Length: 145
Length: 166
Image 1: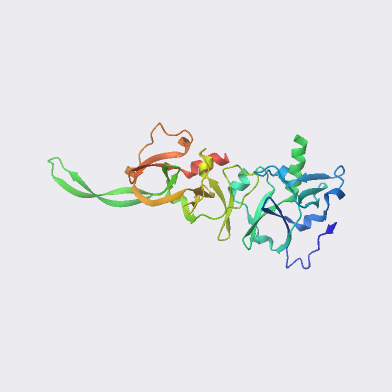
Image 2: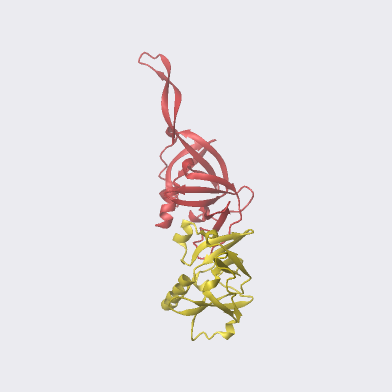
């Protein structure tokens, strides 16, 4: 289990973005919402809600092969759960104002409301996810299934 | 739309010619190709014409939105108008352009084969469209004109955006 480091100085670094990649798409989540990163085999999936990102936000290639899967252990207002992702490859310190809102067509037409922002650094475009929305949508889609 | 004073030759009752000046409303059009056809948007709705820029894929979007681009720090969605109109997808090459269009507070990039020209034509050169128009695009068409002997279908980007998000 990897513990996420606490902010060195909250005033200087308002946000830490935990970045991971799935099918060459970079995603970022607010690291403060992630309590730890676990190996999937160490997580009891009967006890907590586990969602796979690609099942909530479908990719054009629906079969996703994870090279180094990890579980992001997250805390939502109602519950705690885990998100199954590719191993995070970066933690970026940034000011929240550097995150741009997604364009209107993306917010209106995406099947998920979890992609709320975009952060660009050194030519890398990172889609910023809201964990609360993601977990809520994951729960809803499981309910439907 | 702009008004411009145009010299026009008129004949009086006795057949005498006289040159008079009349106000003629004009319309700017951005003409582009889509497969083998010529199409245009109103110039007022087009904010910028960009060379092709790599598009970042966004999962969870309809197929006709291949992703987003970064335009000098602003993030814009990109609409693949081929796919949206039900035509085969764009073959990417150096002629591809992304135009940034905005109408009714919706703004987006639009990926197209190539941009041919930006022209300023008198309103009188815009005609109603033929009823035989392709059903895929009929809802978005507001008229037609000619450009270098080609028929140009004029599309209203506002109608396209409206249908997309309705």
